[in-house]
Amino acid sequence: MNQRPLPRSRRPLSRRQLFLRAGALGAGGLSLPALLAACGGDDDGGAATTAPGTTPGTDAPPANGGGDELFFENWTAYIDPTEDGEIGTVDRFIADTGIQLRYSEAINSNNEYFARIQPVLGRGERIDPDIIAPTGWMAGRLIDLGWCDPLPLDQIPNAANLVEGLRNPTWDPTGEFSLPWQAGFAGIAYNMDITGRELTSIDDLFDPEFAGQIGINTEMRDTIGLIAMSLGIDIETLSSFDDAAPAFERLEAAKDAGQIRRFHGNDYFDDLTNGNFAACIGWSGDVAQLALDNPAVRFAFPESGGTSWADTMLMPKGAINRDAAATWMNYVYDPEQAAQITAWVGYVSPVEGVRDALVEIDPELAENPLVFPDDATVAATQSFASLSEDVEAEYDREFSRIIGA
Image (cartoon, rainbow, N blue to C red; front, side):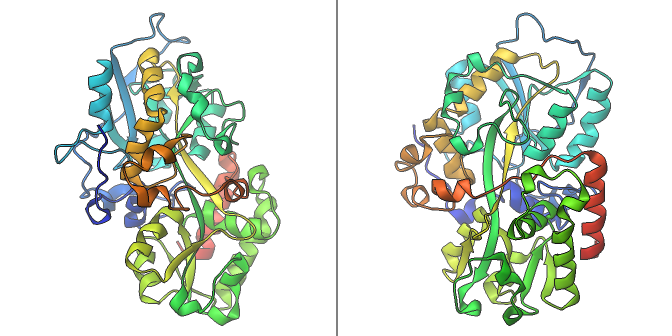
């Protein structure tokens, strides 16, 4: 049966909003300290939270592939729950397939989770989850390290429903290791009551007209990515610090000139709605929800393009329950099932056909261009390159120095 979406005011904080509550760097980019200490009190929908286990690994998965059990570790508040008499996706999957799915909300930040699984996978042992869902850039690191098994795509016919814009992404150029879970964009968030005009360019953030009224996001990959794109830099091919140095320089010059009111993390919502910010760098899903209460709050994909991110399902090396993992991925790539998830989380679904299915669940959301951007908008976005650890550290140090973190 179709699940009615929760009213916006009743939804738990989204995965991205949980990062904002943490007030630290790293919501899909380079992290500084671990992020989630500030998020421990948020409602997690009742899912178990566990640490990855360790099991001596082998070079190949068991011959039978597993079939009646599955363990998926995901982010907090990132799937529709069973509540108020409505059956959520996890329980529907169990009922429909007979597979006993253990669903855990154990991923709190990319780097924190990497620090937990690195010693295990690095020793050639396997972690307990059969599926994990890091952000694309971290997925790229795990794939490059050889710590992922190829997906059994021959058992996932619904993988054909993957939207064109997320096929063969930079983190998985052959498309054999990952299927995206949810996606989103960063761009310009602004208050029309303050700006008095539409904003269309990253250059607007550096316009002296708005001196002292600009917020800059502490998520390095989106902030530096957007600035770099405005300078004509292809952020999908970055390989050294010098490649993006002009973007860091422009950011520092704006800070020194007093253009930036402050670098924001968890509270750009308030500053944007109350007019402390004329504009800032924000995320499409957040602004779509803010605009429901304050129509003056707008989101624009810059003329030079927005940054895109996706959290993506991987099978860690040596995953036991391969058959069950394939069944799950095939299930959530059915448009009817994917629409149930979209109706609750409000992010961009990677599944073709979700919009038509969503019309029956949440017609308003089905018409939201931030959840269903057109092909030209998607084509103009870029995802940040997967960098080597040394280069990432250099980006991280310079960004932290500029923002004073």
